[in-house]
Amino acid sequence: MLIVATTLTANHEAIIADALRSVVDWVDVCLVIDTGSSDGSLALAREVAGAKYAERKFPWTNAADARNFALDAACELGGSWAVTVDTDERLARDPALDVRAELARATEGLLYVADHHKTYVKERLFRLPMHERWRGPTHEAFDAYKVGCRTLEGITFSELSKTPEDYARRYRRDIAALRPYIAAHPDDPRWHFYLGESHRNLREHELALAAYDACAALRGWDEESAWACYRAAECLCALERFQDALDRLSAGLARHAGIAELAWLAGFACYQLGRDAQAVYWSELAIVHGLFRGNGTSIPRIGFRHPNALWEGPYDVLRWAEKRRGNASASAEAERLWAEAKAARERA
Image (cartoon, rainbow, N blue to C red; front, side, top):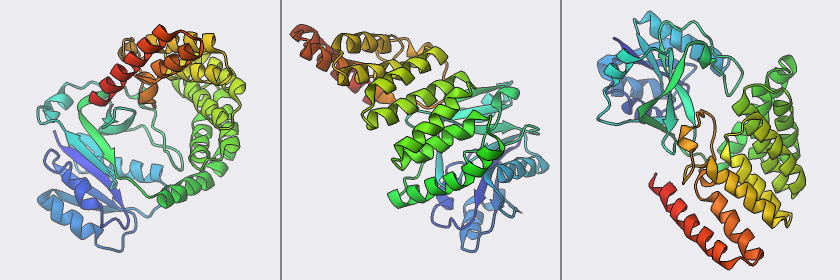
C-alpha cells in the first residue's frame, strides 16, 4: 500500500510547510502540484518532505481540474490511496489510529474526514485509480455516492483563519465564478446553494435568499435541499421577516425531517412573532432530533451543522418562551437544561 498526500500550491510559502508536516509522518509520498508558484513554496515543501517529496506542474484553470490532475498524478506514482491536504489545512491523527490497517479494511472508494469541531466533513482519502471526477469552478463537487463513502474516525482537519478582507475577496471571487457556471448549469442545485453562501457571508441577504430558494426549488439531495431552506430562513430572520422564515423552515422539514436545526429556528421565529406556545412545541421537536437528550447521533448527516442548535439552542428558546407565558417553573427547568446542554457541547 502506497499512500500519497496531494497538495496544490501557488505562492504559499508562509503556510505550506505546516500543511505537509501534518501528514508527512504517515504517508509515503508528499506530492506537490505547482500551479504557478514564484516564491519559496516548493523549496520549503522539499525540505519538509525530504525523500518523500514529488512534484508535478499544472497550469491553473480551476480547482476541479487541478484536483483531478493530482489524483491522476498520485496514481501514476503507484499510489493506492491519495490524501488531499490543502496549504491552509492541517490534519490531526489520533495516535491510536492505524491508518494502513483502516485503509486495508475499507471497501469504499472515498473516505470523508470531519473538521475538528465535527460540524462538517470533506472528501479526504481517495482509492486509486479514481475514475470519478471533480467538477465545478469553486466549491468543487465530487459524487462520492458513486464510489461508496463513509466518514473515517480518528483523523480531523482544521483550516487556517483568514482576515475579514481575505474572506470578502474569496466570496467576491466565488460569486464571479459561480454566476456564469450557473447560467450554463441552471438545473444543478449545488451551485445555487454556494452562490447563496457567498452572498450570505457578505450580508447580502436578499441575493442570498434568491439563490437558496432556487436551490430548494430544484429538490436535489434531501439534506442539501433542507439546508438551503434553513439558510433561506436565516436570511429572512436577519431581514426580520419571521413568518416567511417559518414557511421556509416548514418546507425544509418536508425535505428532511431529521434536521433539528430547522425546528429550533422555527421555535425562534415563533418567539419573535409572539407565538410562545408554538415556540415551545417547535423547540420540543428540535430536542427530539438534537444531540442533548435526543437521537441526533442516529441520524445520518454529512452536511453542515449548527452545533448550538443541536445542543442548547432549543432550551434557550424554551426558557424565554415559558417565562413570557408566566410559567416560571418550566422556564427555570429549561434554563437548567440549557446550561447543561451548553456545557455538554463544549466538552464534546
